[in-house]
Image (spheres, rainbow, N blue to C red):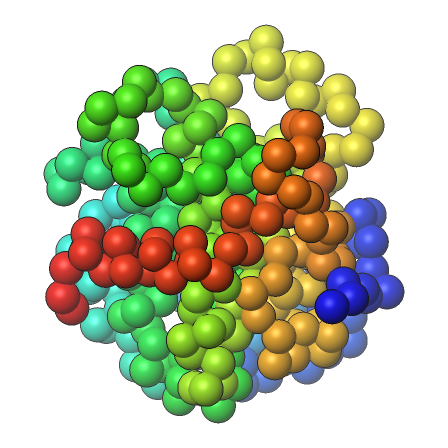
Length: 311
C-alpha cells in the first residue's frame, strides 16, 4: 500500500492548506485551542467560514483567543466551551450539550512530560488520561453528531514522542513500574494513533474516519514542563516550525481530498509518514509499527471502555 502524498510540505502554513476554500456550513471542534497550534488551526477554519467551537480548560484564555481570532479574520467569533479532558464529568457534560451535526473533531489538546507522577481522581496517570482517555470519551460522546454529518473526520494530534513507548497494557498507569515522564508521554501519543486505527475500523460504516499526525517541532506552551535548558536547545533546531506551519498537517488531515474516506493513517509534514519497524534504532520521523497495530488498537479500545465505564 503506497503512502498518501499531497502537494504540501514541511513549510506549508495552515492558511495555505485551507487556500480559497469556502467552509460555510462546516462545524468543527478544536480542543486546546487557547494556545499554540490549536489557535492557528481554529483561525484558519474560521477565516474560511467554518463554525468553530474552541473547547478549553481555561475559559478566560479561550475567550481572549476567540476575540483575537474574530478581530484578525473579520469573521464570526468562535464559540468557547469549557472542557477539562482529565475530568470525565466535564467531557460528558460537553458531549451531552452538543446539538446538531459535527463535521470535524480535532483532538489537539495535550500535556507533555509531567515531571512527577500525577493522577486524576479516577487514579489514572495524568498524561494518558488527558491525551488519550479524555479524547476517547469525547469522541464516543459525539459519535452520533459525527455520524449525522454524513461524512466526518476526526484528527488526533499525536507526536514523534510515540517512538518512546508502545502502550504498556500490563501497567498503563504506573502502579508497579517506575514513572518516567517521557515514556508516559510516549504511550499516550501511541494511544492517539491506535485510536485513529480502531475508530476508523469501527465507524467507517457511519462515514467517520480518523487519522493521527505529528505536527512538527514547535515551541509552544506544550513544553512548559520541559527544563529550561532543554527548551533552549530545542529552540535552536533548524527544522522547527512556526505555529502556523505546525497547524498545516492538522488541516491536511481535516480537509485534504487525498484523505477523503481514508483513516487509520499517521501524517507528518502534510503527508503520510514512513513506517518504522519497532526494533529500529531511535527515530524522530515516521511511525512505529506498534502505533498502527490493529490488534493493539482493538485491545486499547476495549481497555479504554473498561476504564471510563458505561455512558
